[in-house]
Length: 226
Image 1 (cartoon, helix red, strand yellow):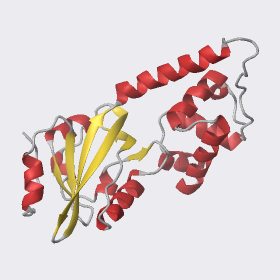
Image 2 (cartoon, rainbow, N blue to C red):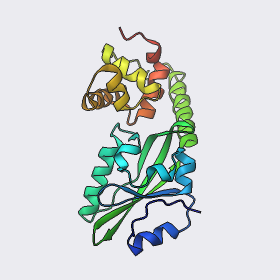
Image 3 (cartoon, helix red, strand yellow):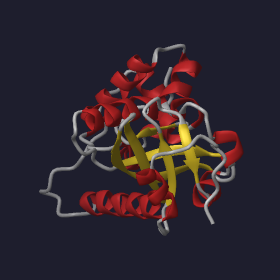
């Protein structure tokens, strides 16, 4: 049974989504970014109760960031803008804070439902932490196998990173997000995201997961930053 504590009358189309059966965790955001529905699966996944989530601005209570370092609040604004333009939003891999199990990777897909008030966003969340860990292990094996290949094959050598880049890299490996890294290093979130993009480029990686796997294999995470 889903959990709903927001008492405001909602559009019928949104009520229908709330009654639908899905194995995914589900929450709904109204045109003003307030959470109007937070179901039992969302409670189970995050450890955050509907009674403390309903009616709150989504960008204040859902803490996380997408794989490329974009904060959830920025992602949400982008999705709402697409919805207002009548466009669909792509799914997003995101690392969120959960009260019960720490930081976990999830996949979020979003449905936009047009109403007289404006678009409501129906978010479907699924836990992908085990898949992330499996991909990380496969990436480490792939990199290791390349190093053990024929001598004529090109080997990957660690790039030269600046001390600040190493600090950001190590904090990423600890599961810190851009906001926390910025607070720790006294940097703006924009500056931290620039460092993350630079790290991905330096390591020849397409995601934080791949970057961390390569950094681990190259021994960068054990290097001193100062």
